[in-house]
Image (cartoon, rainbow, N blue to C red; front, side, top):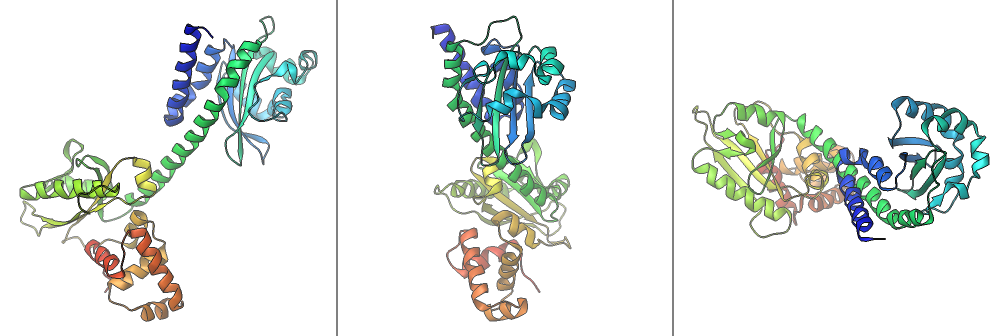
Length: 377
């Protein structure tokens, strides 16, 4: 590989890993692959091993009508795919070695669709994405152009391990994003105001309740994507946020705390609780040190609900209920009787609560819930 070709190859690798973490970049990957290998078209699709059908398809050189026709009529008749997935995974295949050109030229798939698309020669591979899916890459050239060469096959062989790692990374990133979206959607529905911030107080997420409260401009603001409080409370809030965010990744700095923020209107002060954002779906999605800030309005009739504990700390509904019962002063025996479970079950739930909230003793978990306002009458 000469210097120019080597530079192009490394640029392609960079694009591959960029595409793994940026959904919009992934859609352009077939174009980049086709241009690097001087192919007339390319396909990159996900194949369900159980269902034996396409689950996702990105292409270069195909129209939407072509895609629909392939998916609906020809996917099960494509000799390249049928024979290609029978070959060892991670192989760089020249399809003329798997399906003789004369056989392919007489196939229904070639006569009805592939010829129209300029697909006669193909080079590709099949890679495992997970236990459920395969990724199939196809690079195509029309009849009349040369078949792919052994040197191009070697380049594909060098590319394959990077493509596999990029696919695995893409799955991981998308899983984190999806989990984060679900977690934040749950917070959207809460009546209590919740703001997720980075170490500098930059707002990464604010639920509708927080936005409504900040819109009053009565002691709390979310201007310029920054959570701020008026007066001396502003400095204390920044200190608590910085300490809680650092604590979320194991750094020194404190574990947050609570403070009162006066309202300019003369209403009773807001109560703010700042706590490290624990490891879990939201923290994974944000991928940086974060803190959660709960803003409690003493004049609001709606107090925090158990869903906050569930979403912030990953507690199950029954675990959140047990913690709220403990905060109310009920004993293990009383909780077991009220919920028709054994004392051992309640003790197991308490142990899981300690693990998920990062507390060491029952009293610490109860204090945490009490600061959040989870006190049942």
